[in-house]
Length: 116
View 1: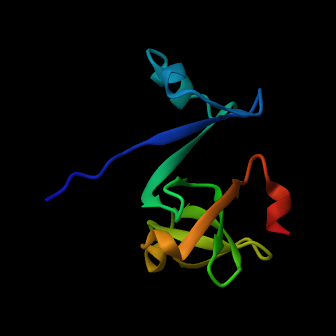
View 2 (view 1 turned 45 degrees about the horizontal axis):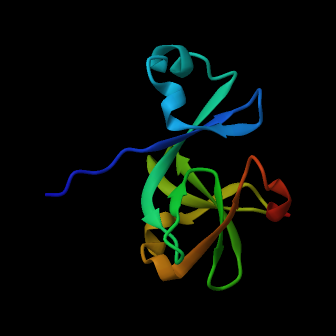
View 3 (view 1 turned 60 degrees about the vertical axis):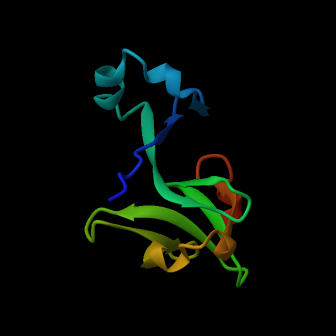
């Protein structure tokens, strides 16, 4: 059985940028307890057709041309995609398990305009 890889990106709300993973070193308790300033974006375990890792809050373009937002549904406890026009959970991410199924085109923090 293969172990699952847990990786995160950290969005710094104050400075409007992703922080380098070494930023966390020695400060994990401070950062985890301070969600007013930081948002953790978990790696989904998937990569897109360009080999880029897909994280929560990434915006993807499906082969159909539709735009979706990768999110973890805390009620259903599974990865999914949100319809960008409605902000509602629409389908399970596992339907798109092959890298050729989608391309990462941005993220919610820096590219909200893509969701219109």
